[in-house]
Every structure is written in structure tokens, then in C-alpha cells.
Image (cartoon, rainbow, N blue to C red; front, side, top):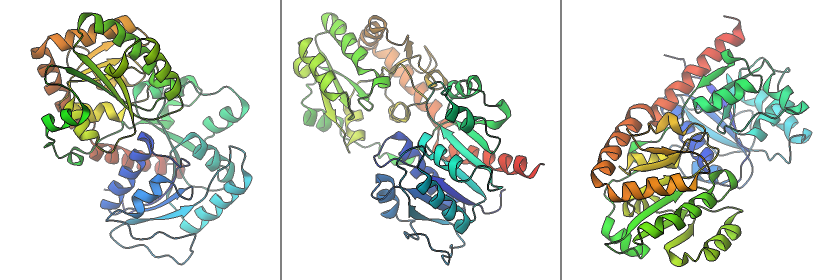
Length: 390
């Protein structure tokens, strides 16, 4: 077992998405194992708000050299906002925070956090520097990306095999990449949501088949392809209904596409919701339409709640969804394939039940938060050994 570590986490997002949910869960999980955490985040971030209000929160203070950590672990929050990849002021302040916190490991949780750590700390401090890579986008081929990603101070936590391959293609040595899948906490759900009441609240009839997508309204989530698939699927099954939970910059464009397709209220964008469990309970099928995807934690949530899955073969999705065993996989941006898979599962109740049961087992065996924390700690240990020259 590792001795108690001090980890400095850097997350630069002010909003709340899957990556921030993973950071919150990791900080809490590490604290429960007796490790100390400093979170560097922008003022007013959703992540800071959630950790500040949590039951395990021990401190929330600006930089304080005299702060003492409880023996059982915990965390504090220090504010530092990066205005861009070349923000020397925030990078210098981060270096001051690092010197005060004296962490055993620095863990950057976003591309901008990676840049801030590289600018302020790489080559200056003999501390292992970890970067969580959550997207399977190709690593940039510009000067800054090459300097960041190939710097010997950094190791990477890839959330899927596709992300790992993208890093290797980007010039990162394989021995500096650790496969650490995202995880979900099975205890986060009550498993007692009233399906009938949830369907009534959403205006869904008993005879209707509800398809749900939970994802930000951004290009790589590709709800545009899902809308095209829905047009085709409606011709075969008029009882289908679609809802999307999530917000993003493509809302107006997607609303226009829905209106032009004449889908009306059969395809609705419901925005960001706090009642995700109830909405998933109301649904009959979860669909992921992404054309790029590191690993979707909403997909894990749906599987954990026993929902059958149709998903694209994007990025790390095949790590989770085994075609024909825990869901059905289709090609990316293939709206006809997507429509056919949706209609097939809408018609085959026995297949839905088999896939859903197998999917829930797979998540509980391989994609729990506890396993994510364990693998992260193992990556820390290996990085500490590498830094020490062991």
C-alpha cells in the first residue's frame, strides 16, 4: 500500500461536464484512502462549489503556507484562473502554489491545465507530473503540443485504449502512458426511481418507446446524426420518442435541424438536468451518437441502471460496449445503421433485456470509481519510481 501522498490537482474548467465529475470523484476517493489533495481551479468553478459543499471538505482557503492537513486525508481549494496557454502570470502563481503545497504528484486534468503545469513547473521541479487525457482527438502537431506532450516530466492517464493510441501516434512514449478508465460509483443512484411517474413528467405515453441521449450539444457528440437516424426510424416505428439531456453551443443549429425535419415534440432537447436518474429510468434505450469519444461516463451510468445500449464505434466506446454482448455498435456518422439498430432493439424485448443485464455486470466489474482510484494510485506509484530513477 502507498504511504499517504499529497496530490496537487489542476482543473481549469469553470463549467461542469464529465471531466469535472471525474475530478470530484477522484479527489473524494483519494481522500477516503487517506491521501491529501490540493485542488487548483478558477474562482467560482462548479467543481469548487461541489467540493466546498461536500461532507468531507476540510479546508477552502487561498494559498496558506501554514495550513495543516488532517491525518485522515482531505482537500483544500486554491483559486487560479488561466487565461490561455501562454498565461505566464497564472503559471508563475501555480509554481508558488506547488512550492507551498509540496506535493508528491502534480495531476493536470485538462489540456489547459497541462499547458499551465508545463509552463510553470516542467524542468523546474523534480515532481512527477501526470495528465489525464480524456479525448481521442489527435495530439496537435504544433510547436507547443510537441513540447508539452513529449516532455520527459509528464506521464499520461489515458481513459481508453483509443486515447492511449492517439497519444502514441502523437509521439508520447508508451511507457509513460497508463490506461486508467473512467469510473462511476454504483452507490450514486437510488435504483428506486418511479418509472411511470418519470414518464408522465416527461409527457411520454405508456405505448411510446423512449430513446435517450445524455451528452453536451457539441460537434463530437454528433446529435445531428442522431436526428437524421430518428427521421428514418420514425417511418418504421411512429411510437418512438427521443430526448437529449445536455447543453452546448450547437443548440440553435440542432433545433433548426429538428424543425426542418418536421419532428416536432417527438425529438426534444431538454437541456441540462439534475434528475438524470429519473430520466434514464423513464427511457427504454440509451443511444450514443458520438464521432469522437474518449469514454462517455453517461454511457456507464445508463448501463449501470440497466439500459440497453446502441452506440457508435467511436474512440473508447468499444472498450465498454462489446457488440452483441453488452450493446449494439454501429459506424460513426452512419445514420442509417444507427436507425436500424434503434428499430431492432425497439422490436426485440428479449435482446434488450439480455444486453442490459450484461452491460450492468460489465460496468460493475470493470468501470467502477473504486477501480479508477486504485489504477490512478498505481500510476502515481510507477511515476514516482520513474522520477526517482528506480
